[in-house]
Image 1: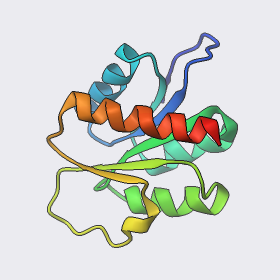
Image 2: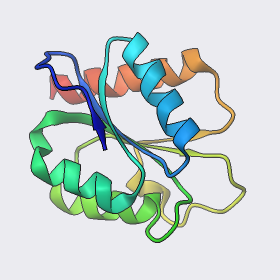
Image 3: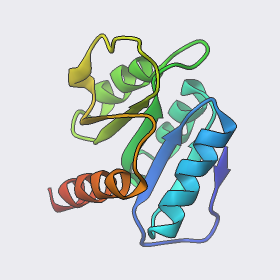
Image 4: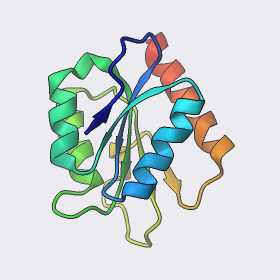
Length: 130
């Protein structure tokens, strides 16, 4: 798990993807747009990060297909704890999402960086204003 160490008032995003490149690209895009992030390679790692500081995160971004538990498994477990936390699913697969209602937004790969950031920003504003 990679985490920025300095205290920040920037919104925090939990980024979950077993693919190193995808995970780091998303975290990099977020950092350039004034977000902080915690990057995790698995559902269990993400749950550990979330459970350590659940109030820290304004948004979760997760991949669908990962070894072991997948993005839907993560969303189910997060929804039990915080039904209002926005969760974005990013998927490049042709697999069907079994329960789309678990996710606030679904983004298909490849995606446009501007559209991605517009989505993230709108969901964080919505979450922070509630």
